[in-house]
Each structure stands twice: as C-alpha cells, then as structure tokens.
Amino acid sequence: MESDSKEMFAFGSSEGDLRRLYPNKWPSEELLPLWRQTMECYYKTVIDAGKKLLHLVALALDLEENFFERVGGFNDQAPVVRLLRELNPSGEESCGASAHSDFGMITLLATDGVPGLQVCRDKDKEPNIWEDVPVIKG
Image (cartoon, rainbow, N blue to C red; front, top):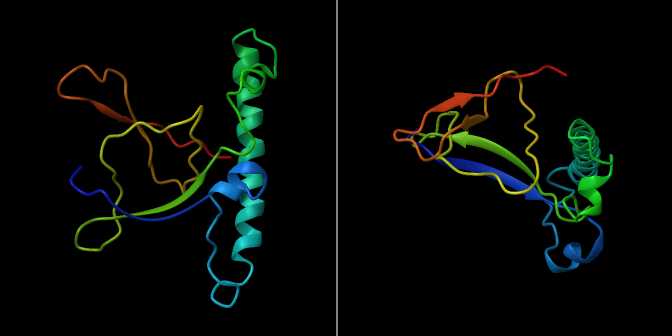
C-alpha cells in the first residue's frame, strides 16, 4: 500500500484521571450540534461491546468471565475511539494504511461492508502476506 494519509478524529473517556491529563478536544457546538453527545454515546456503546467480547474470550479460554478486567487488561478510562477516513495522495478516498500493530487488547472495526482490516500471520516471513479479515454483519 502506498498511501497512509488519513483524516482522523480521536477521543477517549470523559471521566477519570486520563480525562484531566488528556482532555478531549471537541468541535464547537455551533459547528457540529450534538456531535459531542453523539460521540460520547458511541464511545459507551463501543466500550460495552468490547467488554462483552472480552468476557466471551475469557470464557472460551476457561477463565473467569471478568479475568481480563481483574488483571487490568481493560481500564475503563484507557480505550480510545478513532474515526478514520483514509485518503490517497491525490485526495481521493482510498483504503489503506501502512503496516502497523494496533495497541490494546482488542480492535473493533465498524465498517459499511467494505473490508478494512488485514492481518499478517507471520511477521517474520518476507514478503509479508496480508489477508483481509472477513466483514461480519451485525
């Protein structure tokens, strides 16, 4: 992939110590009415989905349902939501970001049906082979 140009809006929790250290910067209400309210609701929805998913992963591994929360793998204040729009150098919409690893326990990718997530099963093998992760509706 040649392009790694993005437009991004990132935000985290509106509560706790991290909020004071790294406050979210919201567009003005005049410019985007209800934007902050909508994004804070979306944040809560995504965080709740992530917790449910981690509970299922723990149960699938024969661990206690709240295992990942107990060991600090899911801090309520740490998750970040990123809204991305990928651009190619000519400014036209495009999919693609350079190879990278997402940080944190899990990545949830909301999509409109267009594949957007790839995995490289063997990072030590050259050349790297990137495979699309199938889009699952729901």
